[in-house]
Image 1 (tube, rainbow, N blue to C red):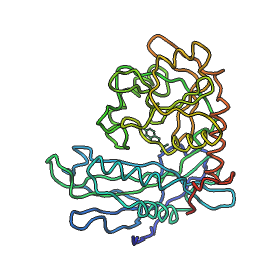
Image 2: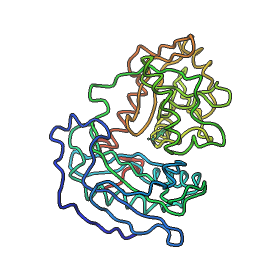
Image 3: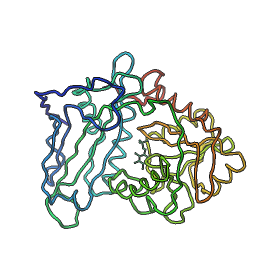
Image 4: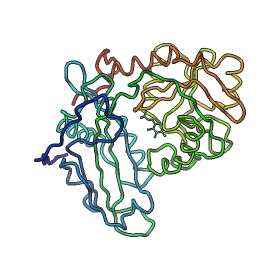
Length: 354
Ligand SMILES: *Cc1c(COP(=O)(O)O)cnc(C)c1O
């Protein structure tokens, strides 16, 4: 793939204080864009100055949400080099997403090359301070200017980047989770296993409700029986019960997280038994009552791991460990962030240099 590069003539001021970056609020100087038109395929790959895009108001994305995205990061290592973490996994997941949404696929190599080229052009934007990183948001939108409900014949694939602060700027604080038994996130045959914006639009109501009740996230149960644990907010979720690890299987309603997969691979390499399958919320609450619920944590690119200290389900409350991050959760956090920031040897070949 050939990428045309048009550099900005008006570079923006970079944030002076990297400890105040927050998440997803400021954007770098450039963006990657590539178009798809029926008959031409994906074409016109380019890196151009960051700015608004012009779309017809009838573009399908605005009406029928033919839209999807990815989320990944670039990390600056102590010696100054910049690296990505398993970008091929994001590329493959985007292909699965495109397939479900009837969007033509982008070759894995082209996706990785586009991310690398953009991060290279904006490399001075990759934060320097500990824990901060460059968040990368690739996304695809249907741009065909027609109101019929059909697969679009025109798309844009765009990548934008946002320097983002350390997720745990104030240290790792375990969170309180509300087990949602009214709203559902995903059903068999639906879109729970892909990263499409529509899943998020449908989840906002539950998130707002949980926030009002004083919780930081929602734990989603399966959409059919509302019995089995699936995900927490926009993270996968793991439970350590009586020495063994449990997480929902990726069978159509659970997003196959890159962090989830990496945690499973690490846990197995450390000798843990990892069960990927159905785990009833009733069994989780019972394990807590029996003193066997040792650790609970979410996993995702933004937080890496997010320890849970309390689960509230209907009128029951489960308190986990002593309210502090558990040893396995901490070990996963240290190992993954160590590899991502180049402090530990990358024995799994997970990182790719920019
Ligand atoms: C993105 C996402 C995750 C986490 O995936 P990672 O690849 O680990 O960042 C988990 N659940 C949902 C619903 C997601 O959208």
